[in-house]
Image 1: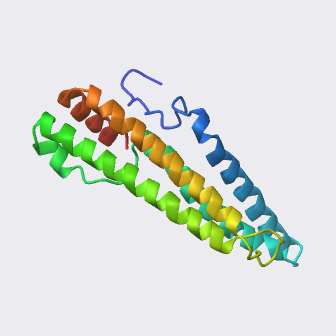
Image 2: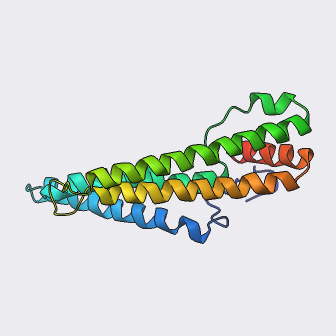
Image 3: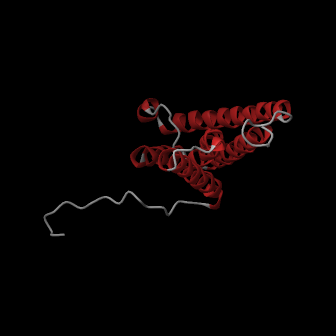
Length: 177
């Protein structure tokens, strides 16, 4: 690389991965393997395994919920950033605190609903393998409660920060994404 050539931005930095992200990787790689097995048996062997499609569907659902824990931790969920740019830092701080409280309440309620759904579907078996469907909803419930805990931790830490620090962190998050 010469002095006049543009510098390339590194986009594969994984330094912010924490232990709480491990379930995401496990579900993702399991899904990848099962989809590969499904593809190989269907197109190479011309005889598809019946259970791979259903398990891949459930793993994709789990990937969405388990992956949301990481998104909450990294503040990478979609949000409206318009008001944050034009309001004073102290008002932004209280808006972020309120939104964090709403996130905590919503994810807690979603976890409670997931427990009810898991209890209702625990006696139903999956179509292709002999496992109860309730397992999926129990994992969704655990994921919702994990999201609530991460949001609660953020809610508590926001009170200790100055408005300027909260605004600066939001700007960094916007630039990072």
